[in-house]
Length: 324
Image: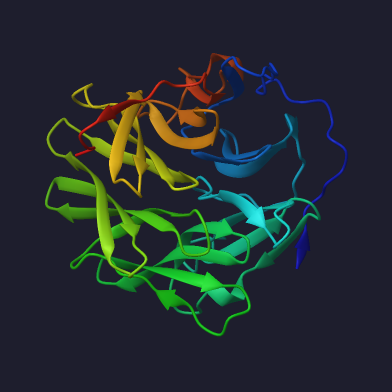
């Protein structure tokens, strides 16, 4: 069991730009390579790339201050998810995968942001398969697991239970880009189906009866690259982004009310790599274009970066007929 260093926060680095405000948009950080982020309550977590070591490290803000962590770096951005930890709803936890040096042997890890204790989640980590893209809600974790033959499966696990519960997934080959828990049983995930040069990405919700409901679809092919961006729950509403970096059209943030099965949309950007609902129609977003680095030169200072971690202004949603 590892313990992350939770010493008092030191002076913040130049790549962090904090402008606390109750209603205005804020730039929280500038990075030098594309990344994704997640948020819950007063916590924000994201991956920060070092151009010299070519490794990502996990960074966390609590109430606007960076928390120093002693977490091993990795060669790919962290698939980090934040959520409530424990029955009291006071704790905040982070879950993510960690892999061996060859990128295989990936298991799920849980970090308690209050105590700094990190542990391998043995309940969700197998010895012969790779796990990734976990999500946390109190004592429940969802995650994806490789099944061989270019196919991945989705599981839901209660910590302390004897076995994981396999969730329904579409037939055929496909990979999971994100799982997202909104309660112990409220689960959504994205599914990518690849046939030749064409990739189609879907957002599914697991209904109470275990069956899948298709919430959104984004297709790719030729110069058009569609993407479903990081679902997040707020009560009975499922928020997600839908982008298209080729056509320049269809870039929106959606709200899907599962009770009424009704959609509403706000203006989005093709640069969104992750969008997470926080409160009052505001989002934490990770933004970058489809380039390896976010500066003209890997040695450029972070303030010249085009990869930004932001908290948005309140967005205005308008009802629409669907999301593809």
